[in-house]
Amino acid sequence: MLHYTGWRSFLRFFSAEDAQAFLKKKYELCHIESAHEKSFDNCYTFLYYLEHGQIYYEQAEKAPLILKPILIFYGLVHLIKASILTIDPNYPESTTVLAHGVSTRKRKKQNYHFFQDEVKLQKYGLFPYMSKTMFHMEQLEGDKITMEVLFQLVPELSSLFFQLDGKRTFAELLPQNGQFLIPEKVLDHYHMTASRFNEFLLSRFADSVSLSADTLSCTLNDSFLNKITPFKYNIEDQTVVLPLIKNTFFHYPELLVHYLLLYNLSMIARYETEWWGDLTKSMPTKDYPFIEAFLSITEQKSPFLIYQFLMEK
Image (cartoon, rainbow, N blue to C red; front, top):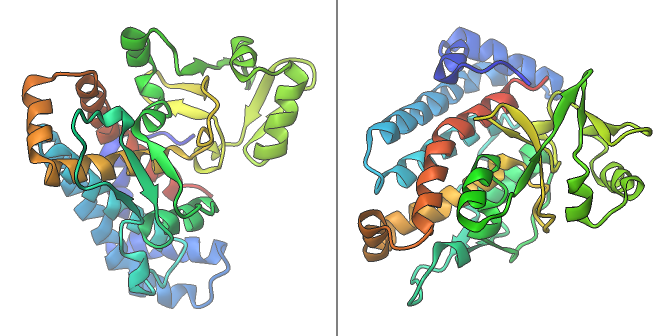
C-alpha cells in the first residue's frame, strides 16, 4: 500500500508535462497503440478531472451537512473519470457511459428509513463501466443493494455499529512477519472450518491473497485494494480488516461502495428536501449518526482509494 498524504499526493499530476508522462506510461503498460499521441491528447482532460474533483471535496469540507453529499459525489465522479482515462484513452466513447449507472426510488415511502432504502444497478452508465474497466467486474442489471449492506462494508463504521447495535462488522488482522493473522472468530461468523475457509478464499480471490497451509494467516497483494476481495483497509486505524458479515456484496471493492452510498445520499439531498431537512435538524433515528460518520469518512477515504488505483503498477 502506497504512502498517502492527502491532496498533496496528487500534486505530482498537476502539470501537463507530468500528467502526459504518467498517462503515456499507463497506456504502454496496457499495450495501447499510439500511447504518446493519446497521452498528449488526454493530459489536460486528466489533469482537469483531478483538479475539479479536488475543488468539490475542498468545498464539501467547508459546506453544511445538507450540501456535503452532492459536492462529495460529484467530486468522486470526477476522480473516477480521471481513473478510467488512465486505462481507456477513448473515454467516453458514447453517451451510454455518462449516466450514473444506478437508480433509486425518487418518491420515498412514509416511515422511510435510509437503512432500508436501496439502489438498483443499471445496464449502462458510469457505475457498470467503472466496475468493468477498473475492477474487471460484470454487474448484474437489476440487482438491488440496501444502504444497511453498504454501510456494513465500510470498515471505519464498525465501531459505530458496535456502539449502536452491539455488533462488530469487521475483524482486524494482526500483522506478523510480513503476514496477517486471521482471527478464529472469523470462522464462526462464516460457519467454516479453517481448511474450508482457505479453500473458499483461494477459489474466489487467489489474485489478491496467498494463504499459509499451517496457520490461519495470509499474505496480501500490494494492490489488494484494487482487486475483487473481501479484505479492506481501515484508514482511521491503519489496519487490514475482514468483514464479519458474509453477504452477496462482501467482496465489492470499497470504491464501488462509496459511489453507491454517495449517489443515493446526493439524490436524497436534492429531491427529498423534507426528509433530508428533518434528518439534519431533528436527528430522529440512527440514520443520522451513520450518515454523518460516513460523509466524514468518505471525504478522506475515497480520494485515498482513487490514489491507490492511480498508482497501481
